[in-house]
Each structure stands twice: as structure tokens, then as C-alpha cells.
Image (tube, rainbow, N blue to C red; front, side, top):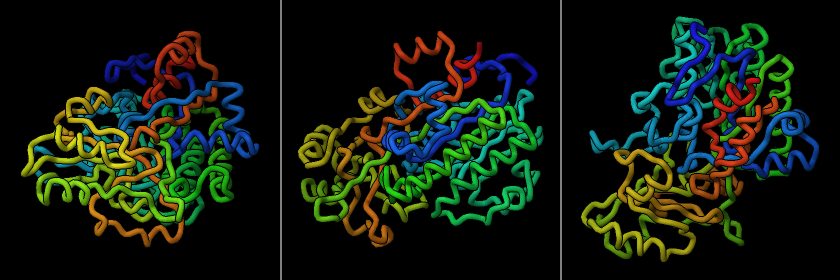
Length: 418
């Protein structure tokens, strides 16, 4: 790096003395870590906890992938960086769009600023939808790398800073709906660390397993053990490692085994008539197989009706709805950008999901697996683990304040500095 410190979004980051690697485990509810420790299947994470630092942190709400990942890489809340959901109504065009275009990010990331100041940065994500967001501003020409395992076979030096990734990792190109999509990310990170020694690494998986398999099941145990092994390799290769998640995961099923869902548009239309209010599923993205577009947080826009108060009062009478807020209140509580919010935010309890109209959701793709999903306050707690002990200042900060998942780069870079 050309400077010993960088100030990024109000936080001063010191130049790391050794490689710093942050691993984001998509959908990793703390129960997975607790169950793994109890069953003795995550010895490397157990070593991190005993020799370093561990707490339960809070993610961003909405507990979705996009806002949380951008918070992690910018070290800031959505009110600062601007990514407020997976999907929103663009106020400039009036069109519903996925928030995957980097133009929506309003501030520089830690990854980009380090790469622009002489550090070699490595960013790998599982799904390609995140690749552009994570890669915004990263100096590929300066030697940094950014790619997804989903499109690893299409990497070029000019676009991604690397080529022949599939050969390097020595794994077949994984299917997008597979555990291997995540394991490919971690294996690629370890191999590039071994050969190229990046200064700063961010590796982010996918929650395919967590959407289907609860903590303690044989499939989730196997996956967690494999993730643990990859984390151990990063540590053994000399990296200071931080581990967190973008959100937790909750099962939303009725006692008879069917998805436990509030069809919010149908309920609102029965009460106010069709066309009064429009439900927009802010959870929406292109990967729908494992969740059928059901989440724990969504938005409602006033159309023919204009009363947010009447809507909120009604929605709160629906069983399974935990909270409903107008735009201003939601922004105050969850630190969100006001210009990218619906008129009303609706949040369900952890055992109930929110859909739009029943006719719009197809659960056949679940293939008999339970509906496990995320988005609300119930999925806000996430693990926050660091392989090296914190210095006194950061121990005091962690004990006396609220730790957020987007503090992870600050804690790993600055909090381990002696």
C-alpha cells in the first residue's frame, strides 16, 4: 500500500501486517455454529473462538444478501451506501429492478480503496449477481482479482484479473444450486492465497444448503465441516481470518408440513379492494428455487389509497405479522436510505413468511424440503468470529456496544493490531 492508513466512509483502516481474509457464510444462523461446536465437527472455528474472538452480531435489516454484503464491504449501513434490498422500485424510472447494478452503490468499498492504494485485493463470490456489486471500483489492472464461482469458466485477465480458474481450483464448474458453488469459492481463495499472497481477501458463499437443511442434519453438518476445513487452510496459510454472515435462517412451516405464509397482497385486496396498495417483494432476485420468493420482510406502495396509517393498522391484525412501519420510521429503526424505501415496510415473525398473491408462488421447486427463508428481525443475529485476539480497545468496544456484521473488516484489520 502507498499509505499506512486509509480513511474509508469515516473509518480509518491501518495497513495490515499480514493477509486479512474475511469469509461471509451466506445464511449462517448462529445455531449452525452452536450445533457444530456441540458435535465437534468444526475444529478450526472452535480454535478461532478459543484463541481469538467470538460474539453474536447483528446484520442489516432487511436481512437479505445484497444490502448486507455491501454493508460488509463498505463498513457502513444502507443509509450510507444506498443498497436497501434485493429488489426495489427505482424512484427515477418507476420500474421494479434488482439492486445488482453497481451504480446504486453511493460510497467506495474497503476492497476498492485498498486496491486503488497499492494493495492486492481478492474478491470471490458464489453467485454472479453479487460479483459486480463486490467488484465496484476494484483495480483489476493493478493486480487485484474479482470473480464468481458461477462464472469461473468465463474469467479473463482484463475483466477479472485472473484466467483458467477452473484448472487452478481443480474442481468441475459447480451448478448454481449446489454446495459446491460455495466450496469452489473457498478452495479458489485458499489456492490464490497460497500462490499470490493477496493483502485483502473477501470470500462469500451461497445459502443453498441452509435454505434446505437445518442445523444438525447430516447434509448441513457435512457442509459446515467442509467450510471449517477451508477456513483452517486460510489460517494455516498465514491469514488473519474473520468469519460472519449476511443473515440467519428460519423455518416457516405449518404443523401439517405446508409452507406457513401470509399472502399479503391477497389480504390487503380483500380489505381495501384491488389496486389500492401494491406489495413489492423486496426479497426478489433471479435465484428462486430454494425460497419461492417468500421472505420475512417486504414493502408496500400506496397506489389508489394514500393512507399508510390505515394500511399499517390493518396489517398488524394479520396473524404472523410482527411489525409494520411507515417509511420514515423504518429508516430510523433500520438505518435505511429514505429515497429507496416503500411507503410501508412489513415484517413477519420467524415462523411465518410473507408472499404477494398466492397465485404468484410455486412451491414445487422445494421438492419436499421445508420452506426456510430470511429477511426479518428474527434473522438478524449472525456469528462474528476472528482468528486472533482483539486488542484492548476493541474488546472494550465489543463489550460495551452493538457489534454489527459490517464491522468485520474494521475489527479484523484494526482490532487485531497491537
